[in-house]
Image 1 (cartoon, rainbow, N blue to C red):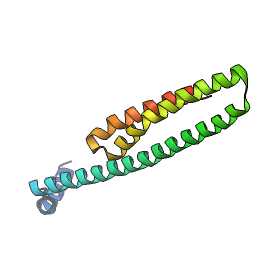
Image 2 (spheres, rainbow, N blue to C red):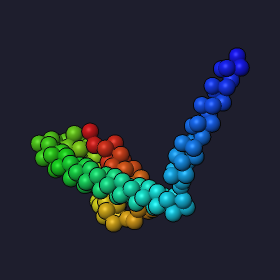
Image 3 (cartoon, one colour):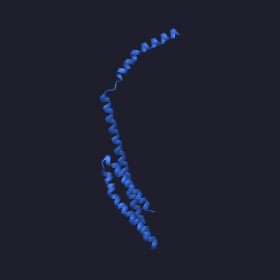
Image 4 (tube, helix red, strand yellow):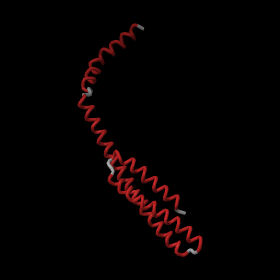
Length: 136
């Protein structure tokens, strides 16, 4: 048992200089922390800008698709008569008004600063949802 204790103590003492030298070369300075924080902010900012660009492209596409859908419904409404035509015309008019109201929100979405973009995104998405509810 004493022999085992001696071996353990000797091993620990022999490895001590290695641990101390490894510890001294692995120090983190305040400068390192600041640089890492700065890099994280830049990376996060770039990621956020990319997400904004992607959403803006998708929003523009949704806006155009809804416009095309309304155009198609107008063509279909021309083929209708009586109450069916009146009902379709009413829905189309309501949806067109919503789409017209949404156009400035799309512009705002494209020009909003990063901190205001989230609000603009919510307003635009709410408008899209309302239009989709109006359309058959």
